[in-house]
Length: 209
Image (tube, rainbow, N blue to C red; front, side):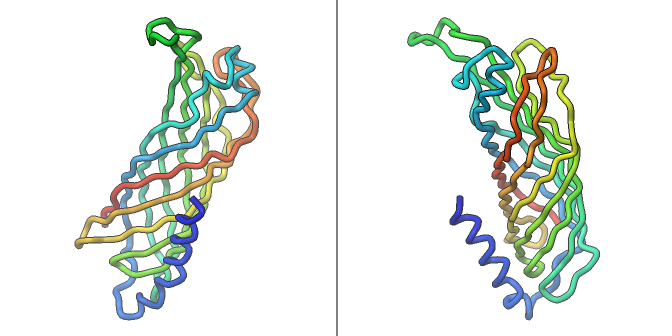
């Protein structure tokens, strides 16, 4: 993970040099990515749901969609503004050694966020890296199966780094590493409580310009 972060930072620092003979970053891009989230196993969540930490899924899968505009473009630099929607889910239920008898309830976890984004981008039209940060309503709900989550969605900060590489005129491969600084929460009738957590989300997919 650290090597990936360093590689993206190096790419961002080196991109302006390559950008001298390249066209500027395009005016907008649309992202569609698959995501992998490290949800951790919070003992507060387990206690308030009446389960153990082994009953909590430690990771989840999801999708990210984003639209980004670059109103200020100068040489190999562009200032971006935009929005991203992130949705992920996970579930876990332990069974006996035969895999037929449940040893506890099915516990589900969902993380979803809609956030505005501000980014600093370094590169050119055919490829660039970025550093970005955003904020928006975020729900991080652990709950038992056969119930509907009713947790709060407080404004939550996220930040990260990423890069896009265009192999043709309109389609790029993109990577993003992001950290969501989720707020602590008290339990409700359905949703378990949780401690403050930094949730790591890695996503990869395509960008369209």
